[in-house]
Length: 214
Length: 242
Ligand SMILES: Cc1cc2nc3c(=O)[nH]c(=O)nc-3n(C[C@H](O)[C@H](O)[C@H](O)COP(=O)(O)OP(=O)(O)OC[C@H]3O[C@@H](n4cnc5c(N)ncnc54)[C@H](O)[C@@H]3O)c2cc1C
Image (cartoon, helix red, strand yellow):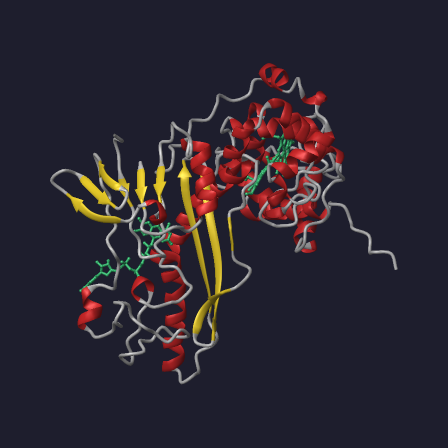
């Protein structure tokens, strides 16, 4: 598996690379996984669908399966409603998630501009709670409080191997900023550590799905 | 040429995760026969407390069960003050998937014990046995404790319930056989869970089904009362010296 990346870094990079080393021979001649960052020509230029080939700066890569992730932006409906800025995202009041462009419309999740918060399901869930509280406050004539938001992201690098990141956010000078309490999986030599993270991932997924949809 | 190629082009902050379907839970091992159990516990006497202490931290047991095995949280059982045979046995039980439950509480232990060999189990068991019995857990109810005392000490002949004290010790301090657990100071939430899982027949680790038999006729409120009774028998912490 080859990852062609138009960036030179990615989230949870240190524990991910360690997991790839341990599980998939990353950085060895027998590697099952390779990561080509922008600095090494990883930036894709074109996809030749007929030849199942990606043309990147580093050259042409033919494959059986290509999973191309296109540049992201808010969905067309957000554009049609006039909620987007020049970059294609929706600017919001960081304390309430009310659109800065259209009053009484609230935008949460991937479409919203949330500064340091990553675009993740957990962020969207955290923002939904802030927005719901703000709407209730506005209806009741109260001033919305100071939000505190969280992002937790677990990934399984293998069946029994989890890695995670936790961030806590606050609004400072109208921008969402990350607090120092945040952190990513440490690298240890204990086999229990990635195993426990894999267990936590499954428990997290179950309880998070309940929180969203139950 | 590589067989598989995945390109990843993100706008900076996209988060990737692979969700692997939950592995189907393995079937539990056949229940213990006394002779097979004796054989399985034959290494327990060789356990080294110092090595157990190292493993307790190295394998993150301390993250849930507390710095020395006396659980600081109502989520987890305390392990200190147990005879090593019981702890070793229960680690083998988990490894063989004999302790299952409706809330997937045991799942973490079923997975964690896959990392342990018998020598390590014996070391951990020796360490917990070397630590003093757990202190009375916070929020133990004196009122409920009083209600549980009679059943624990006298049982209930009409319903065929032997006094718990007959096997678990006069004050829950230790079992009459090496593989009967101490109950004094145990986290009440865990105690209730253990009893409910015997009652439901999900926990099949009890040799000969003794606990499944005793748990069956008990009502939920009796189990609650027994849990607080045994919790209240934990070690009293002395007020710090002035
Ligand atoms: C491969 C991958 C892995 C990920 N892993 C994780 C992870 O492990 N943890 C995590 O927290 N996040 C993860 N994420 C990110 C997470 O999925 C997103 O951040 C999250 O789903 C965003 O939620 P949202 O509600 O803002 O947007 P979406 O989930 O995109 O929802 C928008 C919805 O609006 C609908 N829609 C669009 N236009 C209209 C219209 N005109 N009328 C009606 N409906 C419309 C769309 O169909 C869509 O269902 C992952 C993302 C990807 C792609």
